[in-house]
Amino acid sequence: MKKLALIGCGGIGGYHLEHFIRMDDIELAGFCDVTLSRAEGFAEKAGGGKAYSCFKTMYDEVKPDIVFICVPPTCHGEIEFETIRRGIPFFVEKPLALDAGLARELVRQVEDKGLIAASGFQCRYDDINIPAKEFIKNNRVLHVAASRVGGVPEVPWWRNKFTSGGQLAEQTIHQMDMLRYLLEDEPDTVYSVPSRGYVTQEEWPGYFTDDMSTTLIAFKSGITCTMVTGCYSLAASAWDSKMTFGGREARMDYRLITDVTVYGQGGSDAENLGGVVSGDGMQRIAAGESGVTVNSSNDYGFECDRTFIEAAISGDASKIRSPYADAWRSVAFCLACNKSMETGMPVKVEY
Image 1 (cartoon, helix red, strand yellow):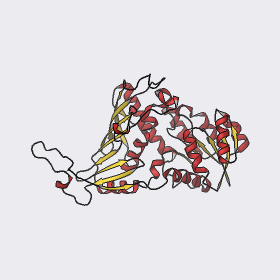
Image 2: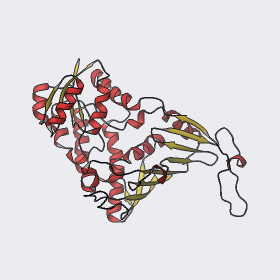
Image 3: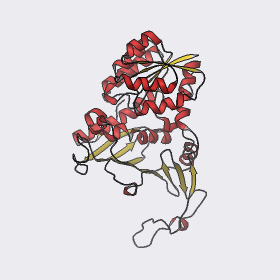
Protein backbone atom coordinates (compact mmCIF):
# COMPACT_ATOMS: atom_id res chain seq x y z
CA MET A 1 0.00 0.00 0.00
CA LYS A 2 1.39 3.39 -1.03
CA LYS A 3 1.80 6.15 1.54
CA LEU A 4 0.27 9.53 0.69
CA ALA A 5 1.16 12.86 2.27
CA LEU A 6 -0.71 16.15 1.97
CA ILE A 7 0.88 19.59 2.29
CA GLY A 8 -1.58 22.43 2.92
CA CYS A 9 -4.57 21.70 5.13
CA GLY A 10 -6.91 24.47 4.05
CA GLY A 11 -10.06 24.47 1.94
CA ILE A 12 -8.68 22.86 -1.20
CA GLY A 13 -6.72 20.36 0.89
CA GLY A 14 -9.99 19.34 2.51
CA TYR A 15 -11.54 18.89 -0.94
CA HIS A 16 -8.87 16.31 -1.79
CA LEU A 17 -9.04 14.67 1.64
CA GLU A 18 -12.73 13.90 1.04
CA HIS A 19 -11.61 11.87 -1.98
CA PHE A 20 -8.69 10.14 -0.27
CA ILE A 21 -10.77 8.71 2.56
CA ARG A 22 -12.86 6.87 -0.04
CA MET A 23 -9.82 4.99 -1.38
CA ASP A 24 -8.64 1.72 0.15
CA ASP A 25 -5.28 1.27 -1.62
CA ILE A 26 -3.45 4.23 -0.05
CA GLU A 27 -2.30 4.99 3.48
CA LEU A 28 -2.92 8.57 4.60
CA ALA A 29 0.41 8.84 6.33
CA GLY A 30 1.16 12.52 6.87
CA PHE A 31 -0.43 15.96 6.91
CA CYS A 32 1.52 19.21 6.94
CA ASP A 33 0.47 22.81 7.48
CA VAL A 34 2.19 25.91 8.87
CA THR A 35 -0.65 25.91 11.41
CA LEU A 36 -0.13 22.57 13.14
CA SER A 37 -3.66 22.40 14.54
CA ARG A 38 -5.08 22.31 11.02
CA ALA A 39 -2.84 19.36 10.13
CA GLU A 40 -3.94 17.63 13.34
CA GLY A 41 -7.56 18.19 12.35
CA PHE A 42 -6.93 16.50 9.00
CA ALA A 43 -5.23 13.54 10.67
CA GLU A 44 -8.20 13.15 12.99
CA LYS A 45 -10.64 13.25 10.09
CA ALA A 46 -8.54 10.75 8.14
CA GLY A 47 -8.48 8.38 11.11
CA GLY A 48 -4.70 8.15 10.99
CA GLY A 49 -1.49 9.74 9.86
CA LYS A 50 0.82 12.14 11.68
CA ALA A 51 0.58 15.94 11.70
CA TYR A 52 3.55 18.18 10.91
CA SER A 53 4.38 21.85 10.54
CA CYS A 54 7.58 21.18 8.53
CA PHE A 55 7.25 19.30 5.25
CA LYS A 56 10.91 18.19 5.22
CA THR A 57 10.53 16.56 8.63
CA MET A 58 7.40 14.84 7.33
CA TYR A 59 9.30 13.59 4.28
CA ASP A 60 12.14 12.28 6.48
CA GLU A 61 9.83 10.43 8.86
CA VAL A 62 6.92 9.35 6.68
CA LYS A 63 8.84 8.71 3.43
CA PRO A 64 5.70 9.19 1.29
CA ASP A 65 5.23 7.57 -2.11
CA ILE A 66 2.77 10.25 -3.30
CA VAL A 67 2.38 13.91 -2.34
CA PHE A 68 -0.46 16.37 -2.87
CA ILE A 69 0.64 20.03 -2.60
CA CYS A 70 -2.26 22.39 -1.81
CA VAL A 71 -0.68 25.71 -0.86
CA PRO A 72 -1.35 29.37 -1.83
CA PRO A 73 0.13 30.59 -5.15
CA THR A 74 3.15 32.37 -3.63
CA CYS A 75 4.20 29.30 -1.60
CA HIS A 76 5.38 27.24 -4.57
CA GLY A 77 9.05 26.57 -5.17
CA GLU A 78 10.94 25.09 -2.24
CA ILE A 79 8.34 22.39 -1.65
CA GLU A 80 8.39 21.23 -5.27
CA PHE A 81 12.18 21.37 -5.61
CA GLU A 82 12.60 19.16 -2.54
CA THR A 83 9.87 16.79 -3.73
CA ILE A 84 11.54 16.49 -7.14
CA ARG A 85 14.96 15.96 -5.53
CA ARG A 86 13.53 13.04 -3.55
CA GLY A 87 11.82 11.63 -6.64
CA ILE A 88 8.29 11.63 -5.18
CA PRO A 89 5.37 11.77 -7.66
CA PHE A 90 3.36 14.88 -6.83
CA PHE A 91 0.06 16.59 -7.61
CA VAL A 92 -0.02 20.35 -7.18
CA GLU A 93 -2.98 22.68 -7.04
CA LYS A 94 -3.14 25.43 -9.65
CA PRO A 95 -1.52 27.76 -10.44
CA LEU A 96 1.88 26.03 -10.46
CA ALA A 97 3.56 29.36 -9.66
CA LEU A 98 3.08 33.07 -10.28
CA ASP A 99 6.65 33.55 -11.50
CA ALA A 100 7.24 32.33 -15.06
CA GLY A 101 10.95 31.66 -14.52
CA LEU A 102 10.25 29.54 -11.45
CA ALA A 103 7.53 27.59 -13.25
CA ARG A 104 9.78 26.88 -16.24
CA GLU A 105 12.54 25.60 -13.98
CA LEU A 106 10.11 23.34 -12.12
CA VAL A 107 8.84 21.92 -15.41
CA ARG A 108 12.42 21.34 -16.59
CA GLN A 109 13.37 19.47 -13.42
CA VAL A 110 10.22 17.34 -13.48
CA GLU A 111 10.94 16.34 -17.08
CA ASP A 112 14.66 15.72 -16.45
CA LYS A 113 13.77 13.48 -13.51
CA GLY A 114 11.08 11.66 -15.51
CA LEU A 115 8.75 12.23 -12.58
CA ILE A 116 5.00 11.70 -12.66
CA ALA A 117 3.46 15.07 -11.77
CA ALA A 118 0.15 16.78 -12.47
CA SER A 119 -1.95 19.79 -11.58
CA GLY A 120 -5.48 20.32 -10.31
CA PHE A 121 -7.45 21.02 -13.47
CA GLN A 122 -10.19 18.60 -12.44
CA CYS A 123 -12.71 20.15 -14.85
CA ARG A 124 -11.01 18.16 -17.62
CA TYR A 125 -12.50 15.00 -16.07
CA ASP A 126 -16.14 16.19 -16.27
CA ASP A 127 -18.29 14.01 -18.52
CA ILE A 128 -19.90 17.08 -20.16
CA ASN A 129 -16.64 17.38 -22.08
CA ILE A 130 -17.68 14.42 -24.24
CA PRO A 131 -20.62 16.22 -25.94
CA ALA A 132 -18.66 19.50 -25.86
CA LYS A 133 -15.77 18.02 -27.82
CA GLU A 134 -18.24 16.34 -30.18
CA PHE A 135 -19.85 19.70 -30.93
CA ILE A 136 -16.47 21.29 -31.64
CA LYS A 137 -15.49 18.35 -33.84
CA ASN A 138 -18.66 18.73 -35.93
CA ASN A 139 -18.85 22.52 -36.04
CA ARG A 140 -16.16 24.97 -37.04
CA VAL A 141 -15.95 27.34 -34.06
CA LEU A 142 -15.35 30.95 -35.08
CA HIS A 143 -15.53 32.74 -31.75
CA VAL A 144 -15.95 32.03 -28.04
CA ALA A 145 -17.64 34.53 -25.72
CA ALA A 146 -16.58 33.47 -22.23
CA SER A 147 -17.03 34.75 -18.69
CA ARG A 148 -16.64 33.95 -15.02
CA VAL A 149 -18.17 36.30 -12.47
CA GLY A 150 -18.50 35.77 -8.74
CA GLY A 151 -17.72 37.30 -5.36
CA VAL A 152 -14.61 37.70 -3.23
CA PRO A 153 -13.40 34.51 -1.49
CA GLU A 154 -12.99 34.62 2.29
CA VAL A 155 -9.26 33.80 2.44
CA PRO A 156 -7.19 36.98 3.04
CA TRP A 157 -4.38 36.15 0.60
CA TRP A 158 -6.86 36.05 -2.29
CA ARG A 159 -7.76 39.75 -1.93
CA ASN A 160 -4.27 40.92 -2.89
CA LYS A 161 -3.19 40.41 -6.51
CA PHE A 162 0.44 40.12 -5.42
CA THR A 163 -0.30 36.98 -3.39
CA SER A 164 -3.11 35.47 -5.47
CA GLY A 165 -2.23 36.49 -9.02
CA GLY A 166 -5.69 38.00 -9.36
CA GLN A 167 -8.96 36.30 -10.18
CA LEU A 168 -8.00 35.41 -13.75
CA ALA A 169 -4.87 33.52 -12.69
CA GLU A 170 -6.30 31.99 -9.52
CA GLN A 171 -9.92 31.12 -10.42
CA THR A 172 -10.68 31.81 -14.06
CA ILE A 173 -7.62 29.77 -14.97
CA HIS A 174 -10.08 26.85 -14.98
CA GLN A 175 -12.00 28.42 -17.89
CA MET A 176 -8.75 29.39 -19.62
CA ASP A 177 -7.53 25.81 -19.28
CA MET A 178 -10.81 24.42 -20.65
CA LEU A 179 -10.55 26.69 -23.69
CA ARG A 180 -7.22 25.04 -24.51
CA TYR A 181 -8.51 21.56 -23.70
CA LEU A 182 -11.79 21.74 -25.61
CA LEU A 183 -10.51 23.62 -28.66
CA GLU A 184 -7.26 21.61 -28.75
CA ASP A 185 -5.66 24.90 -29.68
CA GLU A 186 -3.10 27.23 -28.14
CA PRO A 187 -3.46 30.97 -27.49
CA ASP A 188 -1.08 33.11 -29.51
CA THR A 189 -1.73 36.68 -28.32
CA VAL A 190 -3.76 38.25 -25.51
CA TYR A 191 -4.82 41.78 -24.70
CA SER A 192 -6.27 42.35 -21.23
CA VAL A 193 -7.81 45.44 -19.66
CA PRO A 194 -8.37 45.56 -15.86
CA SER A 195 -11.12 47.48 -14.04
CA ARG A 196 -11.24 48.60 -10.40
CA GLY A 197 -13.40 50.83 -8.21
CA TYR A 198 -16.48 48.64 -7.68
CA VAL A 199 -15.37 46.61 -4.62
CA THR A 200 -14.47 48.76 -1.61
CA GLN A 201 -12.13 48.46 1.36
CA GLU A 202 -15.18 48.80 3.59
CA GLU A 203 -16.55 45.59 2.07
CA TRP A 204 -13.25 43.71 2.07
CA PRO A 205 -10.40 45.19 4.17
CA GLY A 206 -7.02 44.53 2.56
CA TYR A 207 -8.55 44.26 -0.91
CA PHE A 208 -6.02 45.19 -3.61
CA THR A 209 -6.88 43.40 -6.83
CA ASP A 210 -8.84 43.84 -10.05
CA ASP A 211 -12.61 43.85 -9.70
CA MET A 212 -12.95 42.82 -13.33
CA SER A 213 -10.85 42.24 -16.43
CA THR A 214 -11.71 41.84 -20.09
CA THR A 215 -9.39 39.89 -22.36
CA LEU A 216 -9.25 39.44 -26.12
CA ILE A 217 -7.58 36.15 -27.07
CA ALA A 218 -6.32 35.19 -30.53
CA PHE A 219 -5.68 31.46 -30.89
CA LYS A 220 -3.12 30.04 -33.29
CA SER A 221 -5.87 28.53 -35.46
CA GLY A 222 -7.51 31.94 -35.95
CA ILE A 223 -10.31 31.42 -33.42
CA THR A 224 -10.92 34.51 -31.28
CA CYS A 225 -12.27 34.69 -27.75
CA THR A 226 -13.36 37.29 -25.24
CA MET A 227 -13.01 36.45 -21.56
CA VAL A 228 -14.67 38.58 -18.90
CA THR A 229 -13.90 37.80 -15.28
CA GLY A 230 -15.02 39.65 -12.18
CA CYS A 231 -15.33 39.27 -8.41
CA TYR A 232 -17.73 42.17 -7.88
CA SER A 233 -20.99 40.21 -7.81
CA LEU A 234 -23.34 40.52 -4.84
CA ALA A 235 -26.09 38.24 -6.18
CA ALA A 236 -26.45 35.25 -8.48
CA SER A 237 -28.64 37.31 -10.81
CA ALA A 238 -25.76 39.72 -11.55
CA TRP A 239 -24.28 37.55 -14.31
CA ASP A 240 -24.63 34.23 -16.13
CA SER A 241 -21.13 32.74 -16.20
CA LYS A 242 -20.65 30.52 -19.24
CA MET A 243 -18.66 30.06 -22.44
CA THR A 244 -20.52 30.26 -25.75
CA PHE A 245 -18.82 28.52 -28.66
CA GLY A 246 -20.24 29.95 -31.88
CA GLY A 247 -20.22 28.41 -35.37
CA ARG A 248 -22.03 29.39 -38.55
CA GLU A 249 -25.12 27.22 -38.00
CA ALA A 250 -25.03 26.21 -34.35
CA ARG A 251 -23.70 27.26 -30.98
CA MET A 252 -22.91 25.67 -27.63
CA ASP A 253 -23.27 27.12 -24.13
CA TYR A 254 -20.74 25.51 -21.78
CA ARG A 255 -21.21 26.10 -18.05
CA LEU A 256 -18.18 24.85 -16.17
CA ILE A 257 -18.88 21.68 -14.12
CA THR A 258 -22.60 22.21 -14.68
CA ASP A 259 -23.96 21.53 -18.17
CA VAL A 260 -23.63 21.88 -21.93
CA THR A 261 -26.48 23.11 -24.12
CA VAL A 262 -26.31 22.87 -27.92
CA TYR A 263 -28.52 25.00 -30.17
CA GLY A 264 -29.11 24.37 -33.87
CA GLN A 265 -27.39 21.00 -34.05
CA GLY A 266 -28.75 18.48 -36.52
CA GLY A 267 -29.50 20.74 -39.48
CA SER A 268 -31.69 23.39 -37.86
CA ASP A 269 -32.24 26.22 -40.32
CA ALA A 270 -31.82 29.94 -39.79
CA GLU A 271 -35.52 30.46 -39.14
CA ASN A 272 -35.73 28.37 -36.01
CA LEU A 273 -32.43 29.80 -34.78
CA GLY A 274 -34.01 33.22 -34.78
CA GLY A 275 -33.56 34.18 -38.42
CA VAL A 276 -31.53 36.91 -40.01
CA VAL A 277 -33.59 40.02 -39.41
CA SER A 278 -34.07 42.06 -42.55
CA GLY A 279 -32.92 45.64 -42.32
CA ASP A 280 -30.08 45.33 -39.80
CA GLY A 281 -29.06 41.75 -40.60
CA MET A 282 -28.72 40.86 -36.93
CA GLN A 283 -29.12 37.32 -35.65
CA ARG A 284 -31.54 37.14 -32.73
CA ILE A 285 -32.70 34.29 -30.55
CA ALA A 286 -36.22 33.21 -31.44
CA ALA A 287 -38.92 33.22 -28.79
CA GLY A 288 -39.10 29.81 -27.21
CA GLU A 289 -35.80 28.62 -28.65
CA SER A 290 -34.56 25.56 -26.81
CA GLY A 291 -31.46 23.47 -27.12
CA VAL A 292 -30.32 20.02 -26.09
CA THR A 293 -28.79 20.02 -22.61
CA VAL A 294 -26.44 17.47 -21.05
CA ASN A 295 -25.83 17.86 -17.31
CA SER A 296 -22.64 17.02 -15.47
CA SER A 297 -23.22 13.65 -13.83
CA ASN A 298 -19.88 12.24 -12.71
CA ASP A 299 -17.63 12.91 -9.70
CA TYR A 300 -14.97 14.65 -11.78
CA GLY A 301 -12.89 15.77 -8.79
CA PHE A 302 -12.65 12.23 -7.44
CA GLU A 303 -11.80 10.91 -10.91
CA CYS A 304 -9.02 13.48 -11.23
CA ASP A 305 -7.42 12.47 -7.92
CA ARG A 306 -8.00 8.77 -8.54
CA THR A 307 -6.38 8.95 -11.97
CA PHE A 308 -3.27 10.56 -10.56
CA ILE A 309 -2.96 8.11 -7.67
CA GLU A 310 -3.36 5.15 -10.02
CA ALA A 311 -0.67 6.63 -12.25
CA ALA A 312 1.70 7.06 -9.29
CA ILE A 313 1.07 3.47 -8.18
CA SER A 314 1.44 1.89 -11.64
CA GLY A 315 4.06 4.20 -13.12
CA ASP A 316 1.82 4.78 -16.15
CA ALA A 317 0.90 8.46 -16.53
CA SER A 318 -0.90 8.12 -19.88
CA LYS A 319 -4.39 8.69 -18.43
CA ILE A 320 -3.55 11.93 -16.62
CA ARG A 321 -5.37 14.73 -18.45
CA SER A 322 -3.41 17.63 -16.98
CA PRO A 323 0.24 16.62 -16.70
CA TYR A 324 2.59 19.15 -15.14
CA ALA A 325 4.12 20.48 -18.38
CA ASP A 326 0.70 20.97 -19.97
CA ALA A 327 -0.63 22.67 -16.83
CA TRP A 328 2.23 25.16 -17.16
CA ARG A 329 0.86 26.18 -20.57
CA SER A 330 -2.44 27.22 -18.96
CA VAL A 331 -0.54 29.14 -16.28
CA ALA A 332 1.59 30.86 -18.95
CA PHE A 333 -1.65 31.81 -20.73
CA CYS A 334 -2.92 33.58 -17.60
CA LEU A 335 0.41 35.20 -16.74
CA ALA A 336 0.49 36.68 -20.24
CA CYS A 337 -2.90 38.26 -19.52
CA ASN A 338 -1.55 39.72 -16.27
CA LYS A 339 1.43 41.12 -18.14
CA SER A 340 -0.91 42.73 -20.66
CA MET A 341 -2.86 44.35 -17.83
CA GLU A 342 0.40 45.76 -16.42
CA THR A 343 1.76 47.07 -19.72
CA GLY A 344 -1.46 48.06 -21.47
CA MET A 345 -0.22 46.24 -24.56
CA PRO A 346 -0.98 42.98 -26.39
CA VAL A 347 1.29 40.14 -25.21
CA LYS A 348 2.47 36.98 -26.97
CA VAL A 349 1.96 33.86 -24.90
CA GLU A 350 5.37 32.30 -24.29
CA TYR A 351 5.98 28.89 -22.78
